[in-house]
Length: 64
Image (cartoon, rainbow, N blue to C red):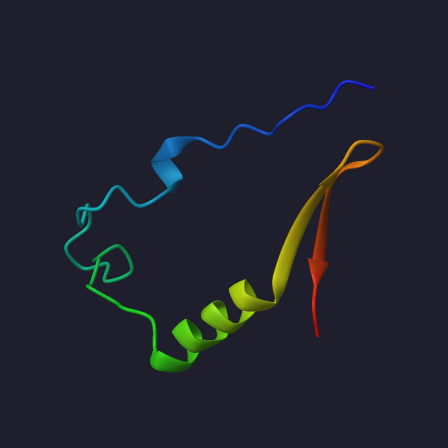
């Protein structure tokens, strides 16, 4: 079965500039991740192991 994708018009996505001056949803602000988010990502990367096997390809293992 062939996979298909749904096309979404680009006009509904924010373009980075405020198209409607009264609409505050599209204003971009500089946002950085919190310390706990960074710590969780680093801990996840330490626990993740990827192994390539000849029979099945890549296996992703999360070591707990």
